[in-house]
Length: 243
Ligand code: SAH
Image (tube, rainbow, N blue to C red; front, side, top):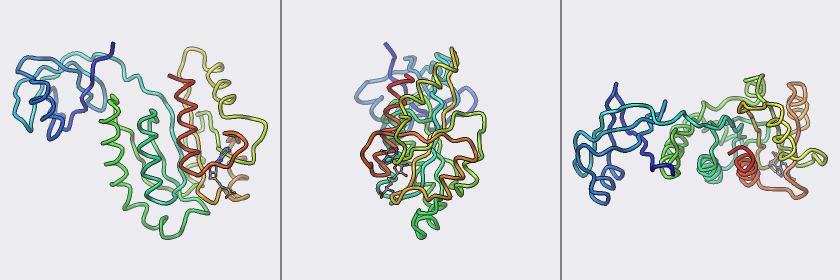
C-alpha cells in the first residue's frame, strides 16, 4: 500500500516544512508527534521525513532516504487558451489525472483578451495546480509553463510522441496512437505531448503547422467535445493506458 504523501510547503537542505491546513490536519487530526515518520514530496523526490517539531500551523521534518523514484508519467498537455473558468477546471482535472506539465498556448482562435491576459493568469494557474496536486496526493506538483504562441510550442520537444486532438480525424484514435507509442517504447516510459484546441478548434493553417512538425492527428470519437472535455478525456485515456 502506498502511504499518504505530503507535499512540502518549504524545503531547505534536509529540512522540510508543512504549513497551514495540512500542518493542522497532521497535528490535530492525525495527532502527529515528534519522531514519527511520513513520506514527504519535495518536488524533486519523495523522502522519508521524521518530525522534529509540531504546532497546529507548522510541522517540521528532517528528511531521510528517498522512498521511491519519482514515478511520474511523462505526459505534457499543450492546452490552447480558452475561457478562464473552464481552463482552470481543465488544469485541475489534468493535475488529478497525472499530467506532468501544461503548456498554455495562444492559438489563432484563442480570444484576444484572454490571450493578452494569459501571462498574468499563469500565477493563478500555478496555484490551482499546486492545490490540486496536494489534493490528489501527487508526489510532484504539475508544472505550468509560461504561455507561448502555438508556433513556438509545436516545435518543442521533438523526441516526444506528438499527438494533436482533432475532431475531424476519423481513422486514428488517441487510444490506438498511445498504445502504439507504448509498444514502441518497450520498458521505457514514452514522453507524450498532446495538444487540445480552443473552443473554436484549430484553424487550417494550424493543422498544417502541426502536420509539418510531425504531430499526428488523433480522435476522441465521433462527437464534438468542448475544449475542456477534450483535454480531460485525453488525460483519462492516457492515464488508463499508462498507469
Ligand atoms: N471546431 C469545433 C469545436 C472544437 S472543439 C466546432 O465545431 O465548433 C475544441 C477542441 O477539442 C478541438 O480543437 C480538439 O482539439 C478537441 N476535440 C473536440 N472533440 C474532439 C474529438 N471528437 N476528437 C478529438 N479532439 C476533439
